[in-house]
Image (cartoon, rainbow, N blue to C red; front, side, top):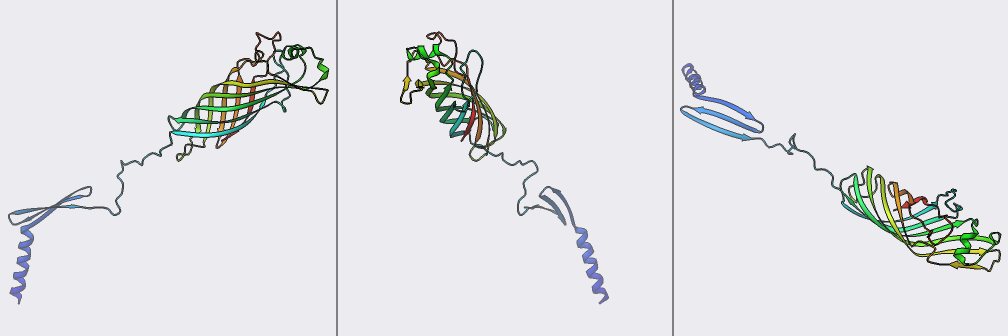
Length: 264
């Protein structure tokens, strides 16, 4: 029995001496070398993590944004009075502007967009009857200023403009809308209907005068807007004359600044 145990131990020692094993690990790969007698066996093992993990160098894809966006809007503005000698005095509450239109924006980056707009605009200027010379030229006859109860200039315009918009807070990636932005642009207006409306002390007397030579049909303006979400505060400065001063002896014109709010 003792001889059998000694034989088994000797055999195990010989086998351990004849089989040599060494290994090298690189990432998920493991190279194992085994030497059995005079033969060498190479074993390659690949460890696949479950679930697979992204590599350290892998980055998540950036959120995309919609490059072309169309919006409709409506707005209400008020004429900012200018009490200088070159402009008529207006009643600010009764002097207003209404806008209805649409715009299309092209997002160059998430923070910069260029765009264009088209809109219909209605302007109502409630003038104080302080210039009988203007009235006589527009109406074609002399009138006593004290007899005037209401004097209004109105125009219906079609406008087109361009603008550049910078986002302080980028819009939503899904539809390109929202965010907070500042904007500057320019627009041109064509007044397809313009007239002076006059009411006197006689309650039945209402006059409209559409003498085309008195009013300039085309005007140009600089625009600025600040917006957040679907609400926009706008300012519009008309840098051309509304009245044709070449045909009028009076040098006065309508106030140039309109300030208001728009909703998209």
